[in-house]
Length: 315
Image (cartoon, rainbow, N blue to C red):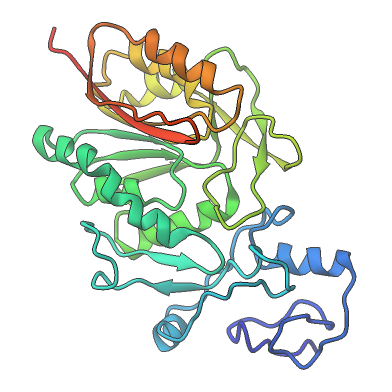
């Protein structure tokens, strides 16, 4: 019978030789056992397995006691338990938000929630133009989709990584917006791509939002479903489009610009990799004249991404 782990009391360690710092079993485990432990707990380079949901009553009992350890259960920095949650009360984060969210351990989910301040321009635009359909490309854990749904928008969101999808669904249930959001489990690709699946390069660190369809050297890859951007636009006809897809935005932006139903685009343009900066410069030069720049991009020599917002000019 596996011993009960003190780091994760709600779950039992999946292996006998648990290497958790608080467990009694401190015998050294092989790298295969460590990888299996990390995989079963969700997240990590090799762990593309959906997280197990902790019962709500346990979260309420232990919500204030769950801590964010600097090391994982295997002793490896930036990796570890990613299937436990703690609810963040609205008083703990001075961020204008309508929703309630949970953070996974050993991730940067808290920083993602704090980034809601960067989307104030988008939310102001939604408040001004009223509730319309929003297309969320790169949904992550669902913060933007849920904030829009709580503003009475109908949302179509795409997210490829299984661990993020599990967190997204939990947040939908937590905020009672399941009927307002349609979640497509896959990655968006350009109009020229006809593949039904694409490889997704997984970031092994704490940032669970930087997984990319781009071929990034040294990253483990998993196969995920692919959704052609042209078909998505023609089927759902969104009014607002939010884009954060880690470098693939340069393949889909021309199609979104030409879609007549789209009136507002809020995009995060990535240029951290050397081959992305020329794409950034090209896409900014090729912006059609009928789009007005509401929020200008801030490009720095050592930056990795910038936010831009466009609205369609009245015809």
